[in-house]
Amino acid sequence: MDDRSPTPASHEDLVQSLSYALRYNRSGKRVSQRDILTANAAAEHLAEMLRLSGYVVMKGPPARAPDAPPPPHAYFYDPVRFKKSDPET
Image (cartoon, rainbow, N blue to C red; front, top):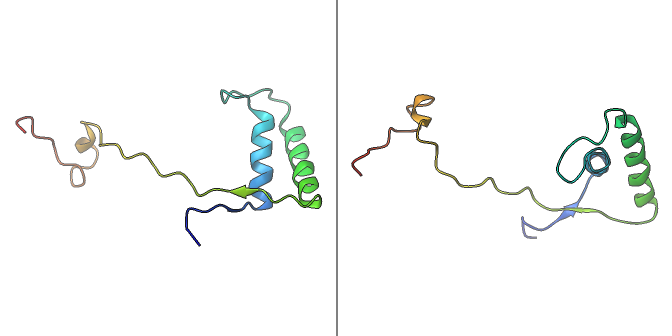
């Protein structure tokens, strides 16, 4: 089996994802401060109904972190790991 293939999501992962989707809009802003308990209860109910109906929600592997070079001032924070860049090269 390929390590990049999707696996069944756990019940807790599904509930957290559904709750997040119910609490935040597309741009990631909070819809309402009062709806946390309602969103959690609705997410729990939806996840249970999906399970009872025979649905299997698949979860893909975590995305790789982007490969970006360290910022030019990184050597100030960790001089052993990040060497000061040579302006001549």
